[in-house]
Length: 171
Image 1 (cartoon, one colour):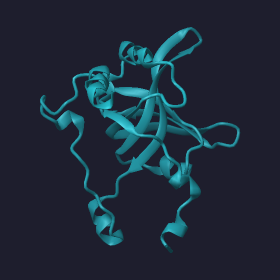
Image 2 (cartoon, helix red, strand yellow; image 1 turned 180 degrees about the vertical axis):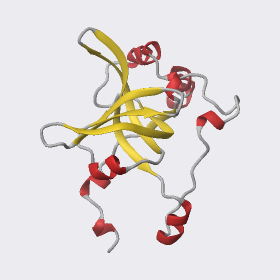
Image 3 (cartoon, one colour; image 1 turned 135 degrees about the vertical axis):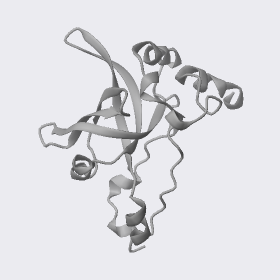
């Protein structure tokens, strides 16, 4: 109970359920546009959330009148996409983080000044603790291997295929 009292109320806000783990290279304008077939989004049919594992946040900066939002590029070393997280909890921790993180987000095709590009609307950032620090704090560091290291049989075919593969179970 004492440990729980140290956490912010924002740590208990539901961010939804992740539909699929994806790679940055899968997040193209056509793949994101295909998600629009799942509309209308709203209560009972929320926009699908995805996750990226072991990406770095490059070019991090505070944005917004109060500096409460975080803008950055999510990169895996091969691909990079712009990302933003509104009302970022512990924004300074995110700014100081040079380690790989996992991201929970919804993907959108954003049009700005006539140019459209994929963008990550980040809902959660999962920080990893180095094994030596984890031993000191008692934290669990078990992390599944990144998608790039998975065999072809373990990798999802595509975002849409993975989503629709579960329709029989859902319906």
